[in-house]
Length: 159
Length: 159
Image (cartoon, rainbow over all chains, first blue to last red; front, side):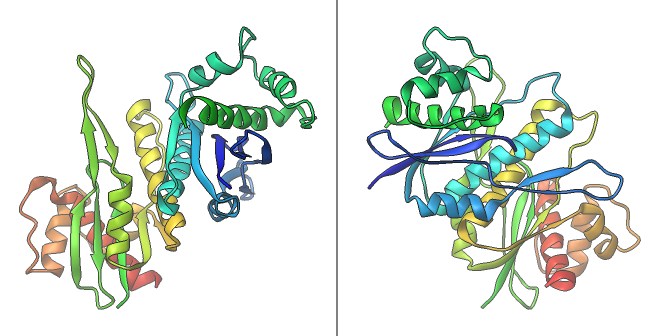
């Protein structure tokens, strides 16, 4: 069995596992830990060991990680957290010895979204076309949908 | 033998290995790969497998990583790279199962720099006081000096 993973980076991102035929094995929101100091903004961090164990559990052979890039005009603090998370995912793959491929959002969208738009909800529509039996009922499921399409891209066009 | 590591984050950072008595076993600049596309700025990325293998080679039992924080006014692109590298180091530790502790620069400097200033070169002066036989001849060795002091702090005040 050779499973692969697609990862949508971010605190509201997700990790999808596909088997080598492209079937969805499991898809979860990014494992995170949230905490709040009195009078301060809530902070959210990746649950690093949970991410590691999820990839190990599914015997992942290759990870597709959505390529993160800084863009002028972003808030410095949220962007810093985003880039840190991106690094954590890459580092975990390196640490557990799983090869990874960075996939730019434009790259997978061009191949998989056909002539659809690129609004957040549209990846959910596309996943429902490709996997009519797979349930993505929530508005926030766009992270899961993205991760499934990233994995699908990896399997179809890279591996 | 229980070695520990101190890590000064960044492309010009460093990794120091101390044994349990506090002796310097080895200290290297951050393993990186640089490349340049024609007409573009040089890019530098961490050599992730080299970092992993360095920690494994020395059978590191605990890593002290200098705590990185975003600060308003930083350049968005260099700051993003810095935070990504910080994440990579954390992720590698998680991936190889090495516990880590994030140490704020103020924290180790307060304990180890005594009443000295905090200019970049001063950590070199301090390391030469603590390890008179250890050679740090270059101006850019401040990254190595920092990593040695972070490891020293970890060993003395955390473990």
